[in-house]
Image (tube, rainbow, N blue to C red; front, side):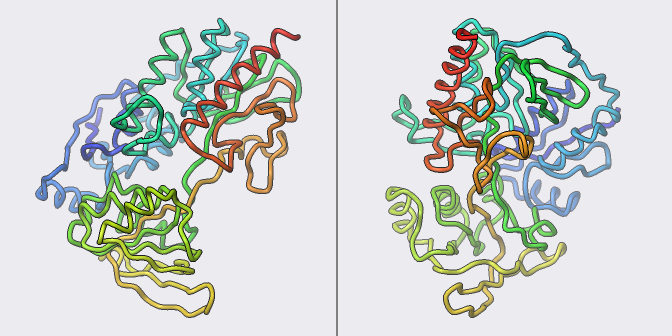
Length: 398
């Protein structure tokens, strides 16, 4: 079998995700940690042409980053290459509760369902652990006065749910049939039957939608400063966005970049006051207001060399020289699976009534998949608790 090599860095959430995916397949790999090692950084760029981590190679084949590895797995090519046999086959078993998603909402729902003796099944979804797994320091989750790393918080939540015999399948749901109870949940050709369903599939980061964004992803374009900030030592970079995520990315980048320019569509930030104060006080962060990125300048050899900016009030355009751009413009709910099945609002969020009930009796939604207002780990966990209690009461009242 070909050798798997994965280039990583310390505290890189997507590196952790890539390793977990490979381990879940029973695959061993050689890890090359680039932290504080410029020689290995050069080796990475020579072998892959990329300046982001993780980067995965199978033999001499460069697979790419974490998203590329996920797609390689989803297509079945990883199983085929390493002759891995699918072991999911659990048709006919009826679960009292199936939970889609494994962020704070899904894991809290699992904990409460399991303690209610409902023996839940959690199908982890497209991003096991949710957005917390790509969050560095979580300082506002109750019970952690010194803060906690996002991935560590997710691991603790999962262990707590597992303690009460929650079952996990680290796969993605591909189809649902909610026309009749019990509901049918599919992972490819594998069928799972649920008396009640809790949807906690969360939200995913939005990108700009510029053609050059995909072409230059990993070559100066990034959506994760924690993963890739190290590559921008002494450089000038741009962060696009005005919320807490954008400020967190900007503040983290001050450890490496000489200058960070935040570009925001409005004339003031949406971020919390404490995050705004941290950014303004840093001394390295400047702001361009009422503006949007129209294009990213560069090519796959040189990487990003600048961006084209449009002032939304005057319609004037200008060029800003930079060597990197970090996109932090919010999230979209992962609800495509339920289009035409569940009621959604204009933003794509699942509409809930009486806290977590959807328009289909027995189907509940919790966390960022239905919350477009608060979008915090603690509120997601709270709604996961409510969804589990609502599901338990629904079963009792049948």
